[in-house]
Image 1 (cartoon, one colour):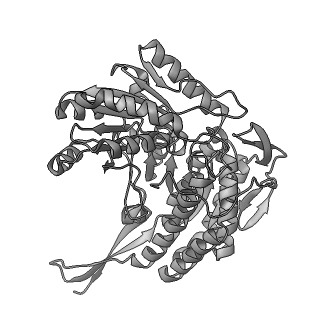
Image 2: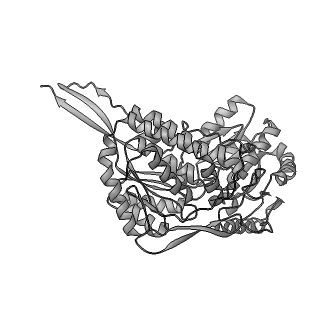
Image 3: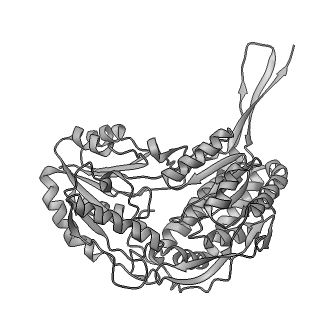
Length: 492
């Protein structure tokens, strides 16, 4: 998840997508009620297909199917689970054109980025956890009483995976891949805005040999089926990515039932440019940090903090460079910024920009939606906002960058840590001591130095403060889908 200049190796065209059905117990079926949810292409505003409107009865069936499949999948040797996950990765790459087309249509992702980022990252996640599936070893423990003591790492059980609209492929695979590697079964509830790739991945998982019932997909609205899934007594763990407000609600439900949770929530990362930074590299990283995925990136860098001596130079460079970033049809290989994922997301960004003007912010470039069909908002840079502005303190989740100045390192760190969020942060400096010193002081789950969005399945990420808890990626994620059992055999 690093490049803005990669291009697809083949032409990808808008697909014609058949109406989606539920995937429960290894079979495709309609919802128990005759209702559909329209799916819209955000680049045109037109309805392109529909998916089943799942109900609480469908959730019950999905949980029952996952529960019935649990014992057999948990007993499958880790090496065999790993082979199946390797096949998933192979099929993802073989069907990359389909996945790119569906994800770009559904979310508005530029095809130039969807292939190397979303699809390839998904394949790499399954490969990574395929390799880790056979590493779930326990340990013997030496204790003074006459006994043989050892530990086992066992799957938790049925996992509810609830995922958001912005990275459907990546954020579902970041839960499903380690859950399956550890021997769990899954009920996946994708975002109602962007459900299409979840259904295609269900087909791919089945093709790879994942047994019936091990992964189930129920499409529908969060307030109905998401809520029911959280409260279902047959669910043993909740893995959620979404807004802080909804995450807090989900965690309270899980907490009342003493269910373990992984919560990857909102972010509002600060990106600091110190006065010794390589300015050309810093400007490139700053632009990438806030336009990537049209700003719909919880680990984006929407707050740019600039050392006072560089402030005017940075604003001038941004004013010149940002308008040149290509905005357009996501199926055009030249496009870097596509539409926002839907009208409600675009309207939210418009409200924040209006608030920035009311708070005294200066629009350096951009600032209003584009006069064209679809949900397009240009990359927007806003200067001179006070720390108290909600535009600085809250998560905008769009292609908007606020720029503020600072005088000292301590001031920069205080400003960076001065919001309720703590998912990501970054800094630009040529001073190695400063890089380590400031990284240690930033309250964030991941810190990037002299670049942005350097991610890999081996590198754990997650939040502190209102950005959640638990980690995705890395062996840390695999551990989060297991329980440790101790076995003590008397030798007396």
